[in-house]
Image (cartoon, rainbow, N blue to C red; front, side, top):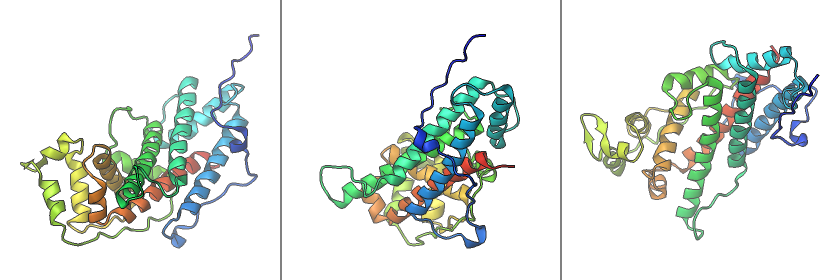
Length: 282
């Protein structure tokens, strides 16, 4: 009988040490505004549970029997309609989850981010923006992996809701709208607007849906009161940042710094909630 080929494990052994008991999330009734330490702890605990399950199943080293492969495959199917997943796809999904988690964790651990030559406010704000972009990249990788979405496609609103519905999450702590007049923001959104389309922003890679999400929150005063809404606003801010439409000066002028800091933590909670759902004992 030929010897099974071992599958490389991207995680060091220390990361995969399992705790004897599952760590449960806080009750929704006691939800509070997150802080970096608690979000990192939640993510770490969820990841340890998932790693312990993967290690025990034998998926990492290739020793898994058919039942173990099927068990992990069924857990991945908690986020999308049931379908048979070949071993190679299960392994690829596990690798992608590891990549996404690592990006989010790196963002959460990036204290006092600064990007630029000096210590100006602009350098600090730019660092906070790109820390947020890193966190979104990690979440996006995990969402597309678990929902089995094409890599090149964006995440639609109904897909965000589907992902959130499948996660183990506390009740969302709302983010209020600044609810103030921002004439330059109106001008920014309206650049090249024709027939309800934001042509200049679209040219910069920000679609009309993203512009609408920003308008509804900042100008129309709609608060962010749910996890899907937080994902939608995060996607809009990420795209506006990544394509150069949202500069640090705008972030400071519109009072977005604390919101971006908070959304970075929200993205960490979403990833922790997804991984915890994967590892949960049914």
